[in-house]
Length: 82
Image (tube, rainbow, N blue to C red; front, top):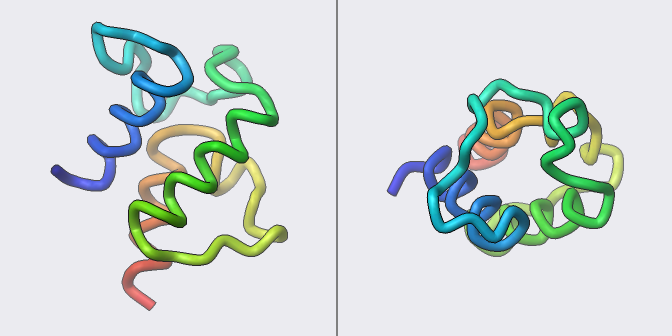
């Protein structure tokens, strides 16, 4: 399963509790759409650290990295290439 699909599945299963998958566009802002709150962001951070064996610094927890599935996917891709 590719990175983006794993992120969408995690959010659908563990944050939205959706049996119908992730219902938003991958570029939709989590905050603007009300998909997640600040605690959910920390869940996503913990998930990407565990799932993709990366370390997320506190200064990296910003909307540019964690405000959409697209942003999280690109962040993980950057971290796993280094």
